[in-house]
Image (cartoon, rainbow, N blue to C red; front, side):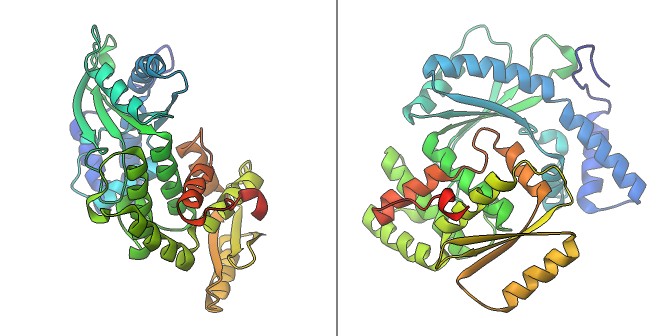
Length: 353
């Protein structure tokens, strides 16, 4: 159901939505039943659009009062992401998720984060309430993620939306550069770094970068990567030589610049990045079977200088929706790497495109 202004309202009770979520998470029921369950979860997700809009307008006003260069954006959590979370946590209640609607604020100055958080806490005459706060600046996540999250509950004038939760994420440019690089690796590199899963060396790499960023910002380092900056840089340099992350990220960005506007969701690409020559080869294939066969053939060669990944056009659009203001732009992250390790020129996407 939609309001006269076009905003979706909730059609099902919380009990029905939670039951549908558990059905999806456990994979129980017929194809039709699972489709109906997804529809219920999707409607509940969509019913957060207006509360998200209202909270974002409010937060943007305060963010710009702190710093006119603040970047403020909003996004609805993608249904495939919700389903993935339910499958990983089949007993989770959809109605307890507090990030179905997300507002993100990115500041150029790290001190602005606390300024905005304090301003929002003490703002007079606000009808929406902050339920919880997560301070990942003073206590970084074990993945290396840093920032401040505030969970709002909508309590304003539109009764149909009262009780809906919206998460506000506040980051610095540097913290956002780290998160963007992790998201890019996950989407293109078939990793799950965001969830603390996958290759231990890759996870360690991004944890070290996070720790060095914390040092630069004068904030606590992640517990698992505390130490002298020189020692951290040495370890990071060794991992960069082994993994070639800077070139991978530059390659993904070069690909997005060339194919980011692709509309055909059936399009499939193979990206081959030669780390020795810094040459990116992009091959467009007609179907997924051919692409998987091509990828298997490349991997069977055992050439450690070649990083190959299969990318669909749909995946490109996922990145665009996840980071509309920093579409696959990992330049800031790679510049930080250059400053920390190479003391030379940054590896650019232009050089690989």
